[in-house]
Image (cartoon, rainbow, N blue to C red; front, top):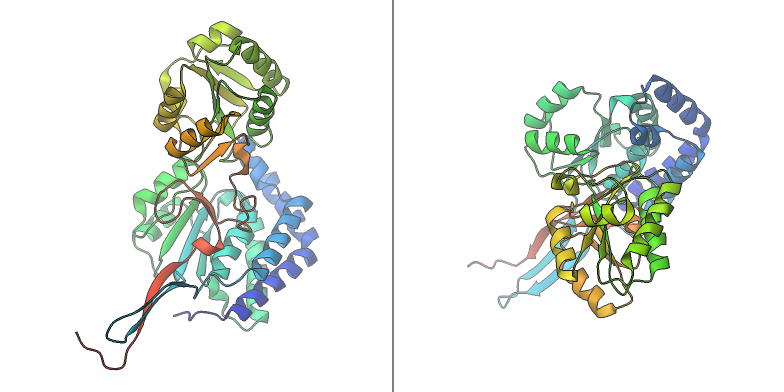
Amino acid sequence: MNHLLSIEKRNAVLNRMSVLLEQERANIKAINQQDMGNYSGEDLAMEKRLLVDDAKIDGMILSMQQLASQEDPVGQIRFDFTHENGMKVTNKTAAFGTIMIIYESRPDVTVEAGGIAFKSGNKILLKGGKESLLSNLKIVSLWHQALEENEIDTNWVEYLNYNRAETQAFLEKPTQKIDLIVPRGGEQLIEFTKKHATCPVIVSGRGNNFVYVNQEADLKKALDIIINGKTTNIGVCNALDKVLIDTKLPNWQVFATELVAELKKYNVEILGDTAFANATQVPTIENEEIWYEEFLNYKIVIGIVNSDEEAIEKINKYCGGHSASIITQNDAVAQEFMENVDSAAVYQNASTRFTDGGQFGLGGELAISTDKLHQRGPIGLQHLVTNKWYVYGDGQIR
């Protein structure tokens, strides 16, 4: 049984980790190059996530420093009540216990997600993808060094070097108690985890995000936001996949043509619904199913709607429940849209690429949840807790 570590101990490990990452920078990059060399390279987004360069190590170090400086998420009082019989009843945040993180390809998750879960007082089980094995093992060895130097058992951070069959067996019959599983990766990984897990799973990482260009849109903003959402990073869940344009937008065909020309500069494959394709000569979508798809690629689908209601309905039908943005100068229309679109994050006149714990002021994130329990959107330190009731009496009986 791992007893809760004091906040001083937890912070000392995180601070030490930031120093070790800097010291081992050259080694981490060299070992990561071995992983890169072993990777077959058929998936562009995967390869991007696998690479560890100086910028990624800088990010890892910063996340350790920021986590160490944040207040303890455990033991925060959420509710206080004094019973008429004199009993004091308090509800406080508590650590889950053991959190398992299953992820693909991204060695930075070994640092950042591990760090968030550790700071929240949890024991961590890491199950990374085989493509990043050497990088992950190197980083876990630094975790162990940081723990040992602070006289803490290294089993607080454990790496499970399992293949698919072993992972499935572990999920179905864990050899140790697990309280929460967080899969970070594509839909297959999430489905696999949900199907076999015997404890709660936080589902994260599916996007299929929409931008709706309302009739009162500032078209310069619309263009910039769409280009930013689609082209800055294709392999992330907050990237943009779908655009809807209101037919009441004055000369919408002119804007449509401009948008297509701009996207083509970035070699984005553009597909349209019948009306959009007719107006711009882009290929027409083959069937409606494509509206459900998340592309993680230089590909976008653009369609036309006749009203705000139709836009809201279409987004709620097809989107992944992650992020949606309305481009409009009319605040009342924006508010109506934001209240009725069923996504974890809704925007007015801003890019969906901001749905991220760091950008939302959480100081990093463990995941971006599209579930409604127990927390939606970016899950930061302060959400990675459960709660517990503390009741103080002096002999009360009911």
